[in-house]
Amino acid sequence: MAIFSLNHSFIGRSKHPPRAASFYARYISRPEACTQLIGERMPIERQELMAWLDEQEQGDRKNARVIDKLIVALPIELSHEDNVSLLHEYCDRMTEGRASWVAAIHDGPGDADNPHAHIIFRDRDPDTGKRVMLTTEKGSTARLREGWEQEVNIALERAGLDISVDRRSLEEQGIDREPQIHVGAAATELGRRDYEFESNQKEITRIISGEPTPVTINYPAIDEGRTRFEENEERIARNRARELASNPDDLDWTRRGGMVAQQWSAITWVHKANERAEQLYERMSNGQAADDADPAEAMLVREHMTDRAIERSNKEARRESVDSKAEVWESRMSDMARVMRETAEQQREHEHAPGLEIDR
Image 1 (tube, rainbow, N blue to C red):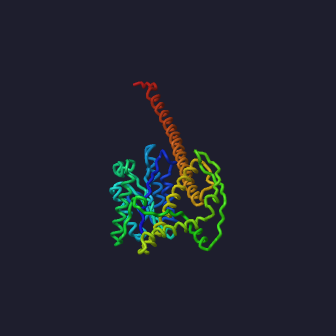
Image 2: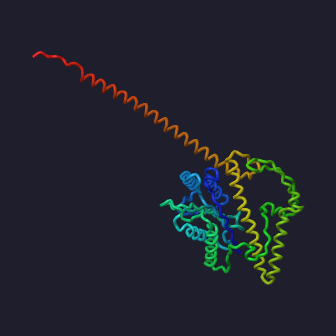
Image 3: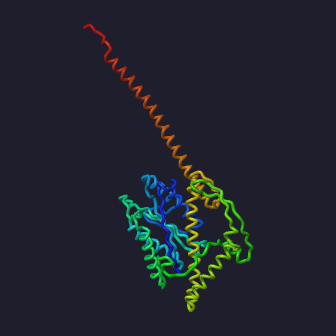
């Protein structure tokens, strides 16, 4: 059963480090996760997209919003092609066919149970430079959510599916369901093999009040004697029990309900991973340690920061080259001007020299 999930945030020049927008584009388009990049009025080739966002950012005022970004859960019942069409319809609707957008689709083997997309909106009309979507105005997130709900339901109906999504919260819909927690694929497989996990304390560094602070996480107290796998399995069982109690004659609904809970857990993990990557980029941009970071995410940040350093170095080299050429040209011009002055002086002296008297 399709779920409704839309997370809206933004990147601004005054609130985020330089090139945060292009780092986000690098993160969501990484080849191991992204199956396709689509978009309009914005480059859809990875390197060109990052360069384009950097150029747009540099042209913005100091307190401008560079991009708006969304994470949406794609209907698991739709094919890849159907979801591509859904994203095109939604983004063209929200941008009114004027503002720029790009979407990174994540529906590969690692996201088979949680197809989703990361959307970047650049709220500027490329021709006039004026804002189109008014994403800084009150109620903009509600409009984005309403538009996504409507477009998803249109796509589901078009596919001949008698299901729909609802943008209201589970509580507002009167659904009694316990949220699940994320368990990685490796841990899930080990748990099913009755592997005995150990729960230990862990020393990490967190940023508290802007300062790196050592923190001890007491996992034994948090876990209360249960592994994440065991706790998640218990939550799945409790959810299924609730669903079966309320719908005893609809076993298929119960099975799909378990799938819904699983995708909710997975999309929540995607949101948190996205936040961690942004926080890591901000920390490393400020010269702070990243010893507790995921190695893959840290490598992605280092790649982006290396590109920034190379670009700065190349820019400085170009500037020095231009300055050097200017000095050479200035020197040549000075030499030419000196020769011209000397020639002019010699000509004036010749013109004013006493003439020879000739007897007739």
